[in-house]
Image (cartoon, rainbow, N blue to C red; front, side, top):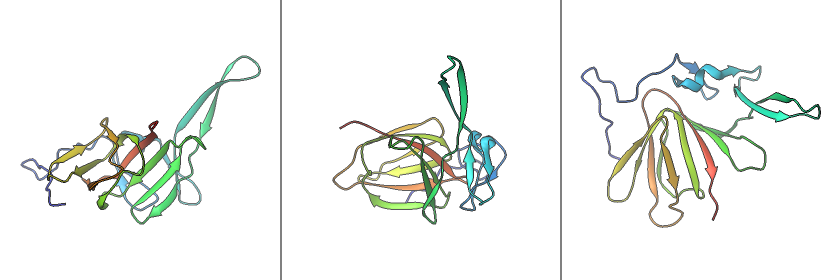
Length: 164
């Protein structure tokens, strides 16, 4: 992709640093809000604070800590299934990651929690997704799209499969 992120007069891109950096298991850092919930485990992997609330046999509501197990996909990304068998996936991408032309792996709603990514389509148009943005990925055929992570922090996104 031949796109340069817009920068301000100090040379910073338009993605603000929101929280102190935390190292991820891939060796990159993130300054997103979710970083305040990340903790290293003994094996060097990260856990994210995710809580389940459920009704117990006693009729009371209870919390259960959910610790997704991230698996390395390659040197620049990892993934964990949020709820086994659900297809809902948490992905982390190194800020240096670039993925040339490809198709969406399926129909997904992709919620960006932190970091940023530029997505380019065939006519050269580039859109930036940042925290709070949602992509509906449906280009399962055709030319596809290219992606490039932007900025100094890792991107964390939730992929939710869509019907059809």
